Image 1: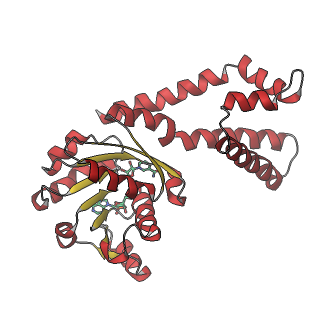
Image 2 (image 1 turned 90 degrees about the horizontal axis):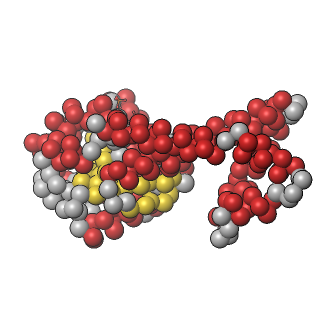
Image 3 (image 1 turned 60 degrees about the vertical axis):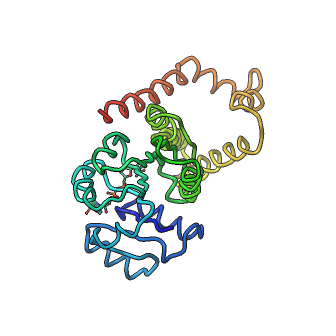
Length: 266
Ligand SMILES: NC(=O)c1ccc[n+]([C@@H]2O[C@H](COP(=O)([O-])OP(=O)(O)OC[C@H]3O[C@@H](n4cnc5c(N)ncnc54)[C@H](OP(=O)(O)O)[C@@H]3O)[C@@H](O)[C@H]2O)c1
């Protein structure tokens, strides 16, 4: 099986590197293409992939085509690809807001997977949600899942609406975590901690809490009850958050991202 990654940017390169590292594919079966000569020259020097600038040289050889260009490049790219596409080729698109229907029409083929990765994919800790057109077989879906899992974990969803919803949780979610971290670091600074110590206090707290959560069956509420005792310091903080409706505001923020994803898809 040969995979072609189109777009050697943040995400395309993250997947290409992860695919080679995981040994899901060997180097000779992974092609990567970008329209920037500067980028492809730099990639050739790394000699980790089979690198192309001309899509007509690599597209016909590919079984799976992974599209990782920005959504505003979608139309021009699909126009270029359409005359060269073969009906048994499978396309995985990570372009935000670009629907399966428009990719089917744009490329004139039916096997389409639409996926939504998130930023930690770049370090192998990503979450990619995906859904597929009905023409993608079970066997192909299992291959797609293995490919996506090379950058972390993946979740197969039923509909594209679910992909928009997952954008509001896992897609945009890393930024919500950074928002929380930033707020805690600002609080630490206000308490006169140095930048260095504020960073350690906050980052290790996040890492430890997530690890505890992952290693148990306890819900976040369960953990909160375990750490907060009546009249104690943690309870004071949690009560302050409840009084200020923080939970509802976070839910609203996630819905704002979900609604924006739906809007962009139109
Ligand atoms: N970054 C994220 O966290 C994230 C999360 C979820 C989904 N996504 C999706 O992932 C996609 C890629 O995002 P990114 O951040 O990796 O973008 P990026 O860094 O801009 O990478 C895209 C690359 O594709 C190249 N390109 C554009 N048109 C091309 C063409 N016709 N043929 C070959 N290469 C072409 C671009 O070259 P030029 O720079 O010369 O234009 C650029 O090198 C986007 O559609 C985005 O919606 C990203």
